[in-house]
Image (cartoon, rainbow, N blue to C red; front, side, top):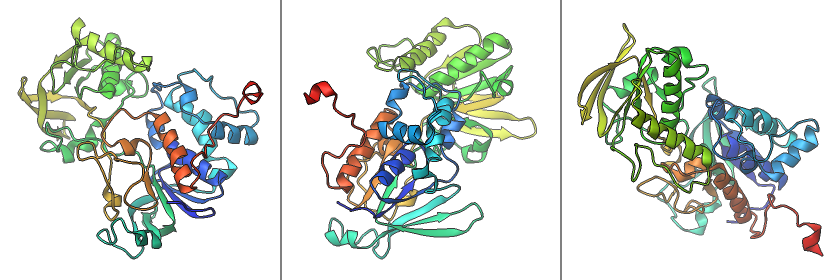
Length: 402
């Protein structure tokens, strides 16, 4: 639905898509408030050691680079085809963008969004009717001191991502017995076993759970550490025996346009074949229960399947993917895929509410940053009712103008 500037837009999430969306909106004359439960790019900072699958040119925009060049003439960008780490991307692009004149005054850090709803209409009222958009959207957020604030807006862009919501390790996707208590003691996602986490995993017995690209990355890291610290041992459990037509559990796309992704998947699978004494792969195995023993710092993990039994580990790394948190949007009219919780369409039944970025893909791990940037372009063409609006477009060359 078309909304003319200077309307008010609330953006949830100060990650890459939230910051880029804010810049796009401010350039078009909209008023913007960005709410984030932490700081700008919090999950990029957590994964700062990880090299991005896609080159820098796929993770920046013409608009962003122009804004930075105007404000920081001496700022140098990575090369277009360079595969930078998340830390480099954060320091050399996203943080300067968040601190630029058009964006800096929009960001409210440490504001956790509790709810997004209509001002005077419940979820069940006026489905698909024009009057649904006649009352503003209200976003309730809690700051670091515990004070609650209400932000009224014409539009809400949910760019909150999925990084704060890891999947559970139970075999059916629900929490394993004891997981909710033990979860604060084990790591979810990506570790830095070659850097700041090396001492934590060196000469330890570590359980890695999962068969995706995060798991593959962690297996490669830990195997490299094991070659330097000989008492390091890794047990890798996966639900399936092997990926289709592969020698290991991680899917490898033969014609993968992202060579970094293919390399990590292939390397992890090869480590299973090599059987170097530091890595055991236990296929067709899931977690039934987990108990953390604070006196010893050990995990007692009950497994079921091909390698059933109770086993003890020093460390546990859960690399089982992420899911979107839709708690804040329970009062909105959304149309989500029942399998992945992804959006079925960029335009939702709830007028002027959009889910962008990795959250829009739900549990589907195929999301790339370039997908989110394309969503920004499309959303603002809808909001502005200008089909050809594209602030990311390159100007036509002189030869094309001739």
